[in-house]
Image (cartoon, rainbow, N blue to C red; front, side, top):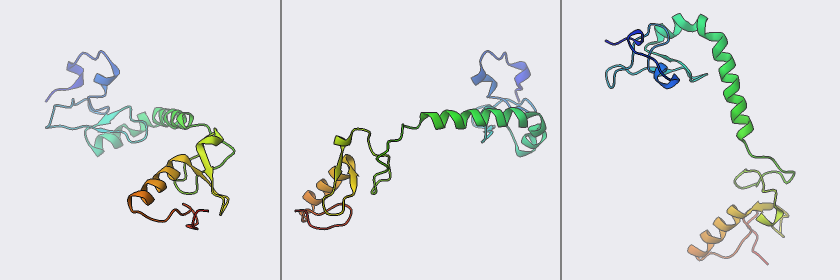
Length: 138
């Protein structure tokens, strides 16, 4: 059994390869370490080690988890005032030419949903209908 104290740690990724509580290193298939689900920055060999280390890790864990949530939040695309596509529920594109307004029900459908519906209707040789309300197209 190898411990992290015997390994020269040169990077954070190597540091993550040992238990944060007892220092046991991960060794291939025999000992798999489980990552902290909140902050994803430390690993543990067992639930016991995780519980023992919790008091030391709690503050740093909350801070790192908040940073990860913020990073995810700021990666999301900008929203537009056009709302969401009623079919796929994705935000409507900012460019209004990349969406279609259905004349029968006045719903604005994204280009992707409109294209997918047209392909479905052509392949199945169906009558052209509105994607939202299914009224026949004029």
